[in-house]
Image 1 (tube, rainbow, N blue to C red):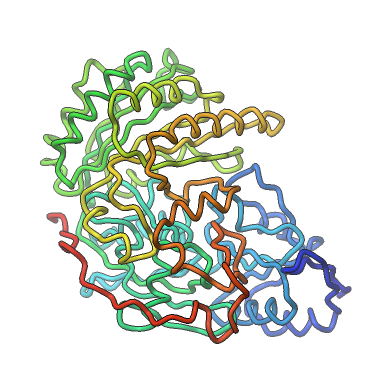
Image 2 (cartoon, rainbow, N blue to C red):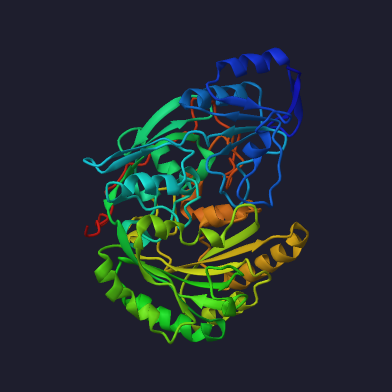
Length: 496
């Protein structure tokens, strides 16, 4: 084993001697990879092909012990680190250039307790993994919309999907977690243990430690649910959004619905006559009995005669994979997101302009209806802020040719900027390609000052310290923990 040059937190480099690396390697149950090692390229590649970074060292953790050793090693040598869970983060922050990547992807264990309706999930698991295990018992935890998304990153950033209005966010259903903090210490946190750290990891991102286990509350749902998925001509988008807006005003919390601007791909799953056609989709899912859902979602399919209607009763696991094709691994992605104060006619006009002027056929512009369970939790009950916006817009740019990146990034920024006059400043940070610290500060609003780590974990949607980092035995600012208050109106469970 030869010596290794590796990046430090201060922006420089240091040399690690062979004997130092050998001692670390011998302590691990998992693998330690360098650039010349077999498996290195597979380990460093993530879902977003725009980020082609090369860590100097990768530690593939087999368990919590490996995570503790990796953190202590990085701290002792002042190393720049990144943390990879599912590797689905659009900003690409799970991979560092020249530093140490702590890779949690081998840790994919899941244990479901159907009697207690809980699931313990390791940080390398994807939502597809979780859905497979929980649906064996007719149970769900609210996750994202894409099965390959990592559980850890989505939950730490909030976590929204089809079930958001009935069951809340992923972080709202987190009961407890095991966390390794920047000093290498192990913490079991919950509403009754280490409350401030528990508060911070529910929406505060990866700033506060590495979660090695999540315990979620489960809810009865499935195995069959109702999906509405009609596709209409993009030329009818303005009237379609007005129609959808009226539907949303009366929709029960069981309905999770969207508007998507997209382009039909050249794929056998779609009629050839529609390949390349710009459409506006009005998908929706009912969180309850599929038969009742068919009735409640019917209006989404009756705006007018659809170009294509992909609606039907499908297994919940199939729903969670149904839109994976929209965001294939290895494509280039750059996303922006914003909460909207309303969906009045002026906003609709701007959204239609964004949706129909997309610079790439792989780009999707989505409008989410929020409210319901999301808004019944006070903004300071968890780190995830700004819960009372009625709508969210995502501008999800995707393209194949890396040489076109500057054009698609410029279009995305321009489209996002055009929506700022209608935003309350909030955004879904998990879906953002963030370059500006000010955006993070605005997004967290009043919660920002309470979210001040020592910034050892900084390759994320970073919350920077406002003063010198505290000592290792004080990960948070010197202030007493805020008392936890009961949530307003608990989260109802859907009918089985």
